[in-house]
Image (cartoon, rainbow, N blue to C red):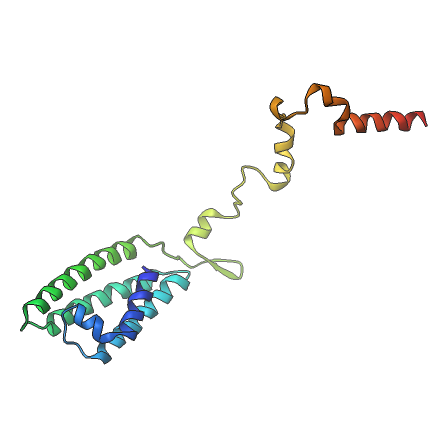
Length: 178
C-alpha cells in the first residue's frame, strides 16, 4: 500500500488533469495535486515508520475524502464521464476495503519500555531470539561433526595414496623418522 500511495500520489501531482479526466471528475488541478501530496505523505509514512497504523488509517480517511469528492465533482453531463466516475468510485471502494483491512490487522506498538528504549509488541514477543535452535557457540562446527563425505565425492581408491589425508599422514610419519 505504501508503494501504491507513492505511485498514485506522483501521478496526481505530476498529471492532475489526466487523473481527474480518467476518474470522470471536474476537480481542479490544485485539489488533485493536494490529494497527491496526501498520498505521497501516507506512502512515505507506511514505508518508513516503525508503526504504519496511523498512516494506514490516514489512507482510509483519504479514501472517504476521495469518495466524497467523486460524488461532488463527477461530470454528470456526459455519458463517458459518468461511466468513468462509476468505475473510479468502485475502484476507490475496493481500495478502501483493502486499506481498512490493512489498518485493522497492522501490528500495534504498545510502547513498553525496556531500559532506555521503547519496545514494540512484535519485538517484545521475539525477545533476544536469533533464529538458531541453540546458542551460536553451541552451533559452531555442528555441521562438520555430523558430516560424512558421500562415496561418489571421495577420491577413487586407486588415488587414495595421493589424497590430502594420505599426504599429511605420510608427512607426520616422515617427521617421526627424522
